[in-house]
Length: 525
Image (cartoon, rainbow, N blue to C red; front, side, top):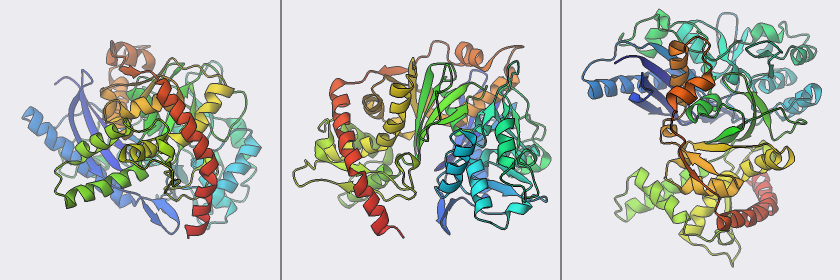
């Protein structure tokens, strides 16, 4: 088999490994389920669980390869690592972890994010790594003076596999603001903003430039698998050291690659535990907005990102409840069948969900000003409580906060979008999430079959691009002409009835935010 490229992505609920061949088709895959933990007021994952999950996902992939191809997996041409963006991982000079991993889901950095945004005149969201760093400085955390290296989850895994402290440009843009100077081909950390940050931390013993990973662009070689890294990935010894790795990327960047959404006026929506939209802009935006991150594609184009901490967690919890009920009554549906049936039922509901209202806030939600969350379902006595309306309200709730941020881009900034692709768990059931998202944003939404492979496939494509690109071939050309030639996906136009129903739901949603706030204040510990 000519060319095998491995992609590993550490998502919020699954660690997935995907192996693609020279035709960019899946040759084998494996996955490991995991969950973040809320410990001592922090959403976190243990680093031991990171490696247990990576090994399990890769082991299952290797077993799948053996079954599919009748031969053991021994040769891989290139590897890519991706993971959820942002968060906070800091290490001392001897490589020791200084404080438990703080994920993007934490919303305890409001003071730092506000101060940095004001100073930089550039929106710094609470989940960005630099916001976590400055909050630790403001809080006088004792580990701050010992920091020798700060990175993300993908950067950490890549570092341990290769020994290189680097990030891809798309991923780096969610750590600290990046800029591409005229005449340069890759982005760098913004030197002006970096110097401003250093004025805030004169007593730490370090400068920001000393502790950040280096930035590499798409297509650059980001190191090779070391002997120690090979053992971490595959203790059985099937995989040899020396395999080149592409720059580690975040799930936002790999989602753009997996949906061929890295050209100007394209965009994608990733909907799983969190939901975010990435729109590649023709130009920047006119001013900073707290609802919008300015980040970059893996090849450095400006991207407006609307990120919401909460998407399917509450919906998934209700599906588990229905599965429990199904078990009591002797129902024989498996999990995918149950999801499909409940999603399809939502299409039978009233356009505005019959007056039902749901908030999916498992965690805080900065766009609407919530530091903490409390999942909430409510209705009036005259509301129409049916299964169809309930499921429609659950699905609408996954899109409501995203709508608030997207309205800024589409209405205030007049951003132009030629195509918008959906991927992630919300879009797995054919047509349902796609149709309702099109209504929510009032733009056509397309879904590709290949997008279901997600970020593991996307970062495997980045590894293939690094290994296979022709001289001067851009990532945009590689994707358009080699990977996605002739594949535009299946697009759904907004249904006027659905659009009108979502507008009514959002009017009710905006009025009811005070109910959610009261629930957080009264029930939160």
